[in-house]
Amino acid sequence: MTALAPHPDRLFPIEPIERDLARRLHASVAQAPIYSPHGHIDAAMLADDAPFPDPAALLITPDHYVLRMLHAVGVPLDELGVARAGATARPSGRSIWRRLCEHWDDFLGTPVRYWFETELNEVFGLTEQPSAANADELYDQLAETLARDEFRPRALIERFRIAVLATTDDPADDLAAHHALRDDPTFGASVIPTFRADRYMHPDEPAWGGKLDQLSARSGIDCSTYRGLLDALRSRRQAFIAAGGTATDNGVLDAGSEPLDASDAERLHREALLGPLTAAEATAYRRNMLYQLAAMSSEDGLVMQLHPGVIRNHHRPTFDAYGPDTGHDLPDVGSFTRPLTPILRDFGTNPTFRLVLFTVDETTFSREIAPLAGFYPSVYAGAPWWFLDTPAAILRYRQAVTDSAGFTKTSGFIDDTRAFCSIPARHDMSRRVDAAYLSSLVATHQLSEEDAFTIAQRLVSDIPRATFRLP
View (cartoon, rainbow, N blue to C red):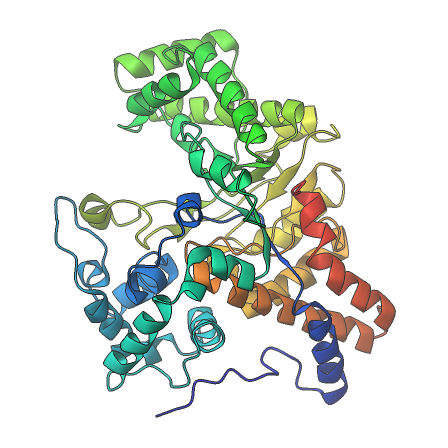
């Protein structure tokens, strides 16, 4: 069997002098605490601290990076533990794991393979590459490992050195798990909620009216009016702040942010409850809501994260059968400078307002995001994420953004994951790429070695803390 042993010099430069410096830069931050200001881990998992049910439920089914690649080579989502609408049976964890192992070499050269190799070896102690031949043996080893107390969620979050972990939460969530973790004297990490109000911005979606009802029930404010919706969102933002939240998150098709007169917004809200809006009306409502959420951030200081340009649920039959977040969200062309004009005109120099811009269209890093961050005090260049959180793309990001925005107007690394055990592997990947980039600046005499070590430390500590106003 082929050994599973990630190379200690992975992602470092091939030139010996630069490689030696990259090694030393990485070593200086390799054990630093992890700040994860944007992710999708369920806080209840940590509050309950129950053993993980099986290796596949932990490592495969919740990870849409893995799902989409296996689906692309012909593995049906049913066979990966994704429940079809109305289905009650789930394949066994062992059979799901076998499917991954059968297609292990389809991941060669991808960041998914990189994360998996690091995770399986450094977290779980596997020493053999997965294959169809050893799938059952490795599954048994993983299942036995996960049954041990030191592999429960709370023990792992301590082992991973996660200082702050931000979750993603609906405004109508009760945040009970966050309160339980905050009030538990035996739990050391900060697990903080992130306010994501996307589902209240789309009156053309069938679930919109039901979401308003849920928000009304949670906030005690009638959301059948536009003014009531805004008041309820403001109220819940304060509840998130009380639970430790420091940021919001918005994923929209485009960054358009033209505000409406309150009377026009009220009319559209009322008409949407009575029947369907036109596509233009629904777009106007959504763009106005994005502006209103920015206005709220300019008042209460919650950092506004924005990631437009994703075409959600591209394959309608898969969405109808399995629902969202099943691997078929795809990148679109991005744009920020013109669409964000209303928000930046009114709040761009407000010291309370902070806007972190993410993209899946890397052409916008040098053309739009970095220049915006290089002028507006409120704007920060978000790290590459989703399709771009790869070694090559992270390096291109540094090269594209640093000229205009430097290092301090960036976000720190964003793991953006539902795969809990991949968090340290992803952050270590980013630290290695940054070490390689900094070593290249030293080698070309654009940076002193002393400054390189300082920046390496700041990229994993005070830069993400300051950008996201983390505890």
